[in-house]
Image (cartoon, rainbow, N blue to C red; front, side, top):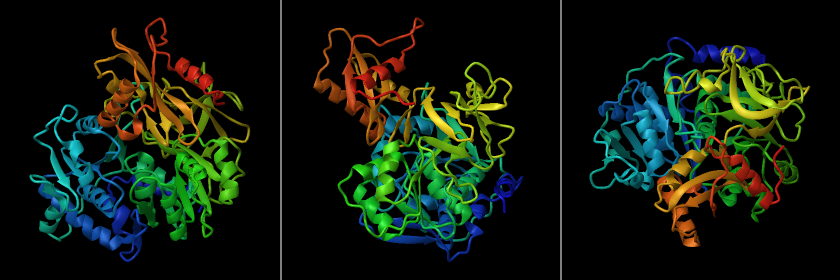
Length: 547
């Protein structure tokens, strides 16, 4: 089957006027086949078959149904990678409800924003995350909110998900049908220019991720596949969980955070053939003193979340015996560009290239001064041709009208917000972001949210947050802070500000360096010029501007 025919087939499947999400992702697959292998921090693995997933998710759905959850309701999880997470997600979809993923590194303020923005009144949480939902200055006391704690960690007064499931009927819940336009996932952007925007993914969004899995990543039924990205974000949710379920291909989930030792051990112990992760994972492996195992079986390695820098493949060629393929995507649209692994589309890699359009997508680079293609090797705006991209599902954000700047006036082009060029062969190259998003360790972080936390400190008059170059993470967060009169900058105050971000936004997103300055550079209209701060910092670090 050609790539075009496969796109047409999957598009038809996931855009049908009547479909059953649980059947598409689970029930149609052989019950005895493995859906997931879940590996804990000690390397112990447990498998979850489709039959077990079906039975467990039916019973979990009964438990949620007993709380009043039904079609269209938002249900959030604050959970690590586990069999329970997959079970809860599928149970939500069995009821026709909408899934709201929450990243476990978020602090209460970031969680509250997403709960309130989505309208989620049921939250399933792991015991070690439960404290983040306690009412306080950053978490409102919502009397409608039901908190369900997994495992045996329920505190006095908590509701135990295990108890609810044990008391639920084992009878399957009635099938709930929806359509390709029906809502599936409600998540949020990184908040680059303001508060994070709600994005509601329809069921048809899954088709693009399955196409990406098969053609971009090149995963097949003969693969041993592992996506190391966190499912609290779009790439991890869809590449590690949803797309493999749709394709009926086993996927591996590793509990806990990154370490070079556990990553190498997992790759070797499970003889992983297909691996995808953020560039920071590869940089972490490269910089680690942990030796590369001799018994690796890697055949394909991929990267997404931020531009892949050249030193990764300089190392990978010698250490892994293969090159890491760079891919490009966004929460709104999915994965439209890839250096494909599928033999039908594979081409020799060009250093710095994001690849070519994934089947089902049409992209170009528009001129900066008009909405027309800029031509080969001319820097411009990376854009998606909406009419020629059957996998394009994004039309607007949760609040209508917020996407106006993302489309050209005639609606033909979706503007990714990235500057780049395309060469005569059709290979795309990233140049820079035309917004101020920070990409650290594969996570897209909006400076606005961090700035909003910093200015809550009584000593801070105003501030600006940027991404500074970092050899391992790609970028790290740094903050430029103007203090109120009568306040002096000190290491103690810097530590206070860092801790404030850790506790009120996210532990991973605190500024690694605090610069105390007298004034921020601004335009005549009063807008902070972050690019000048970035330029200054690169000069200080003797790092050239990216090309």
